[in-house]
View 1 (spheres, rainbow, N blue to C red):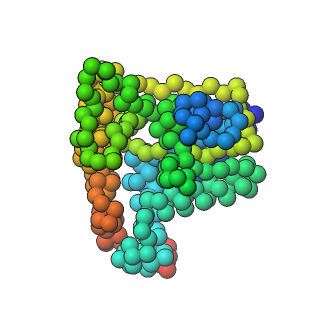
View 2: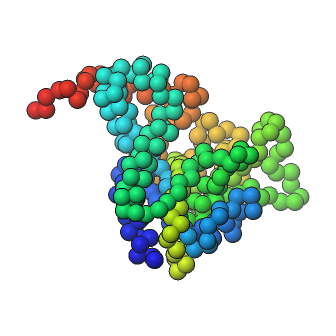
View 3: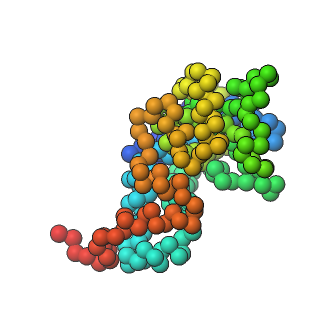
Length: 274
């Protein structure tokens, strides 16, 4: 079955290519299930194939930017304000568009599949899948969990510093992008079993315990300044526009994108090509 699995991965990578800011990483459901509690296990055989999809800095600056410009021109005649009133979550809608195209290709090739997203929740409002665990299991990024770096003798992390009902959580770092990336979705292929497949080991980015703690504190206490993203000396980072977009409240994010549209010719679809 590994041949079929590689064929599927190739199809996915063609639809979500690296130069558009995507990566896919294969893993077995059993490897994930053995790393989580019973609350988060998935109801598939252990050797079932899954693909983790993550986004890199180029997703925003290349593919998402092109999608925003084209959508404004073709569906809203260049009226940026009209589009902002109708679309509440541009990143999510962009990703859904890309995944819809992928789903069509998978169905055409008769590859039965299910998709779980980073925002997929159970009726009890729990995540349906733990993306950071998937990233570690698939070898895509190293998942630093606070419990691995806490000593019984020390009061760390400091209780109550984050405010009520907020939990001190772990951080994943990518070997190339550091924290300048995001887990997006997992595709599960129930008919494809890959018992012989061995996932890549995730590469540890930080080795000193003090540095790991500092990264975790930056992530949990000051995530809005994005300082946590630069741990591990990433070689490719989010642009200033992308950093500002993700650092703003959702209601203010559209304004960050306005310069992409200002100065663009209107009604491009009606213009004669030279």
